[in-house]
Structure formats: structure tokens, C-alpha cells
Image 1 (tube, one colour):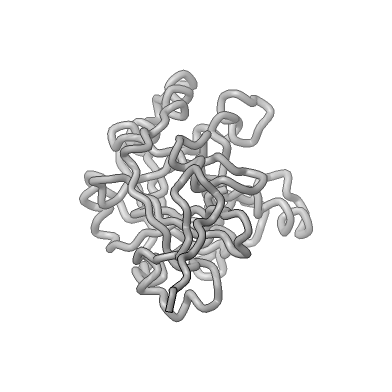
Image 2: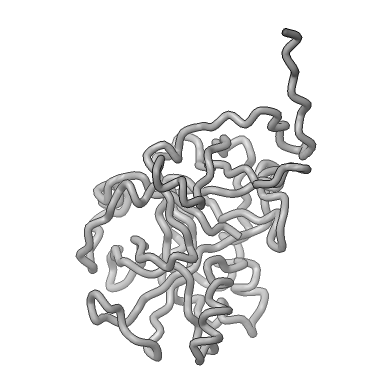
Length: 267
């Protein structure tokens, strides 16, 4: 699953990206906190929707609480699985929440995302920062939902809007990075900017949705490198350095998950 993203930029970048963007929610965005955003913290995050002939900036919580989560116990257990949606299910599974909710499409702006790689024999996985070459920002297609059956946002009194970002089968590079776990060999859906905007088109058909979610970004268009831990308590102390490349002695190249032997000094 992709549960770690970064939007290390000013919100003004969104105004340049989306013409005539309407800011529906007034909220200061902490750029330093945006260096790493973890899905299961359920923080409010800027997302883009389209209605009434224009783009809208809204702040929503990451991870959707779906209608079938009708008890606190169900919410606690099942919401953790709603940070991502398998885009194949939007059209391919008509029994799914994603199919029923497919008209509520949004874009999640990021400057990069993080994924964790398993190395045989290593205790901790290695996080990688991944972005698209030549793009200061890109948007991951997703879905949003307003759950009217749960308490409103404690800060604003508004019905709580929530989102989930789309994933698909990984390309070669991302298979090498996201190589472990129940949802291994997955990656966020990444498409050209013009396709991102099509995702928000209210006239987009089911066929159009299927075509977009089938898009696989070529491996050579990705920029990626290892970074320090992004989820540890210690990472709060070096938050401004999270995006810097980190050297892991013995880290093998992608495609080989056996660590390289470390050279020992002869002296």
C-alpha cells in the first residue's frame, strides 16, 4: 500500500497547476509537516475536485470511512485499509464501494511519495523517495466521500470529507522497491497531467475510467533514491532532511534483494 506521501511545496503551486482554482476551505498548510504525511494519522490534506465548471481545493482526511463501517469497532479496523483503492475494482468489480462511488473522483497533489523495500536479512525496510522526472508536482487520481453518519469535523463543524488514492500493478522499478507485504508489487496510479485533468471531467465514462486506470508510467520516467526512516519517532527530529538521499552500506541494486558484502579494512 502507498501510505506515505510528500507535498513539500507552497499551496500557491496548486493555483498555477489548476486554472481558476477555487479555495473552498481556508486552512494554513504547514510545509514542514507536508514533508511526510502518513495515511493512518488521518490528517487533513489538500485535494482537488471539480464541480460547477471549476476546480475546487478542499481539505479532506486521508482514509475513507465507508457506509458499511457502522460501528466504532468496524471503523477502527477497516478504515486502515481505505487509504488506497485498487483502481481495477472501480469498473471491474460492480459490488465494490469504489464502483458505487466512482462519480466522486479527486486528485491528490504530491511532490513525491515513499515506498519501503525489503532487503533479505535486514531488520528494517529501506524507504525510497519516488517522484516523476521533470515535474515539480503531480497528482494521484483518487476518490472522495462525505460520510454524514459520523460526527462532523471538530474544527469546522463540517461533514467530514475523506479520500483514498488509486493504485495499480507496479512497473519494473516499483516492483523492485515495493517488494514485500500483502500488497507488494503495487504503486500509485501516475499519469500525464492532461490525463489527470480528464480524471476530474464529470462527463468521463466508465470506458474512459478504464482507459485511465490502465495507464502504466514507464520506469525510466521515475526518479527514486533511498532516504532515512520516515515513520520513526526520531524522524521528527530531522524532518527537514527526510527528502535527502541516504547512503545504506551494502544496499544492493534493484532486482537483487541480497545485501552486498561490506569490505573490511586490512588495517
